Image: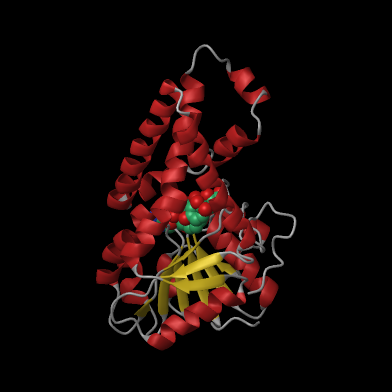
Length: 304
Ligand SMILES: NC(=O)c1ccc[n+]([C@@H]2O[C@H](COP(=O)([O-])OP(=O)(O)OC[C@H]3O[C@@H](n4cnc5c(N)ncnc54)[C@H](O)[C@@H]3O)[C@@H](O)[C@H]2O)c1
Ligand SMILES: O=C(O)C(=O)C[C@]1(C(=O)O)C=C[C@@H](O)C=C1
């Protein structure tokens, strides 16, 4: 499927922007993509590896002709970037973002955009623990969800065109309001990341188990935690500071359940543990039946 914008600007040339670039080119080489990153070193790497048709040295040059401008920077700097590009956007252009948090990004970005451009936030539910311009790949979004989060008064055609764009680069799409989005991802992404960071921190702190034992004897469970806990510190600092309320709500519930399980272990309440694990096993089976398990041998064959 050819993608619906002729000229796309990507701001912040890391994992998500570089994957978007390769995915766009895979599906429609005619699209013209400009790119900007804050550091000259990142821009040099982008030029060296052919990431973007033109890597620009200023934000203004990057965005001025674009039909779609996508903010692919950490959540905490989205507002600063929007303030810089706001006066230089083409009339009728769409501004979007890929931030992992939506309400805080909307609050930070929307005030800086002129009334003659459309703002349609989005969040691809796809990523890896890697970051930077070399980490992207064209298949990242294949069969993964991209959540489109229109703001109040979003133009219906602009929302549809951005939805078509994400479908054109491999995603499934769903629409959600910002508050609900932030709660859903607190459960499915943000709290799990914090738990992984904590567990790896605990292993690191535990003097009686050596680092080499942790490295050598990590079976699947802890290995997955270490992969997640290797994710970019700036990105995740910004996620937690900007999705405070929902993350704290989920962590509060998590702590209560953890205490109940701790108590069951201490008191030898095997029924509690067995019932709990039976319930959680059903969730995993639901994910597999829905075709959402990327580790499963048949992943990628689910219907769009
Ligand atoms: N990594 C994931 O798994 C994932 C998944 C979905 C969404 N996201 C979201 O996508 C966004 C980008 O994440 P990523 O994983 O691509 O990060 P990344 O670290 O790979 O890339 C971010 C890029 O932004 C640049 N940057 C930082 N501040 C800037 C500024 N002020 N102006 C211009 N460029 C700036 C950095 O130099 C870097 O090139 C974040 O908002 C993140 O929440 C990440
Ligand atoms: O696959 C991973 O490594 C990810 O952490 C990706 C992941 C997630 O938690 O699922 C991380 C942050 C996002 O905003 C979306 C996706």
